[in-house]
Length: 85
Image (tube, rainbow, N blue to C red):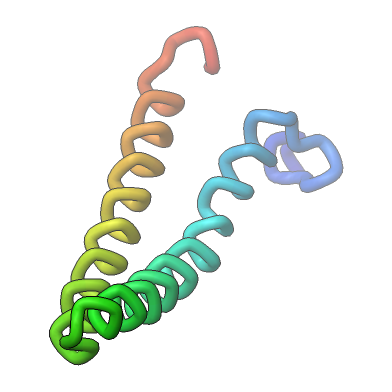
């Protein structure tokens, strides 16, 4: 078995990569849920909770995909960086 395939020999950069990817599993549902309920609360404050929850939901989805794009850029930068290889 090669040393790069052995999880015991994985370096801190590889563990950071996996932590970035696994954080997306939490970022997506949390940002969408927070956006939904925060939008509903703010919408209710202004007298239209339904419109607020839809705006908050869209905001949460946009935030989740923004985080996905940031993570993707970070991974691409790590893959193309000659110092990492």
